[in-house]
Image (cartoon, rainbow, N blue to C red; front, side, top):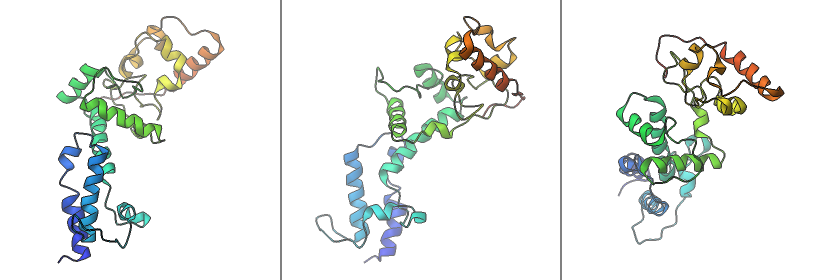
Length: 231
């Protein structure tokens, strides 16, 4: 019979790794996740499938990280979401891939990551985007942890991407974003243009618009593009 240490090792190395491939592509139903956790829990406790055996420690405690007093067996729910969210990271970081171009063609330059409503059709990508939105509704904004490093500015959207600060410029300067007729312009297009306002439908007017415009000019004037690619 395996010792508790042996069961712990097999649990973490084998049972936790078997479903990774499918969990990295599809959102796993909650009922399936619970069943998978039940299998891991019973194996760790040395119990048969139909046996009700009292455990020495709660399974939720075991799944907690070692830094917080647990044994560091990550929950299948957390694994599934983390693996799905890696696709968002790939979309943001690999702009030259065929997969990126397909998503961009279907859902726009931003991949519909800022879509808080319903989608016309369901797909693997829209499921991932919805899960990202669900996490944001619970106070964890995944996208806020991603920021573009601008090089030549050719692959970074001036208004939409977080590049100058941790917040997109369309949120920092909403009145200027509303005035711009080219909302998907790149950083390179804006910086190299004769004026930031050359694509505006009209010049800023009124105290609030003029204040935002002056601050935007001040921020953008400090930007110096290089020959390296954006990343």
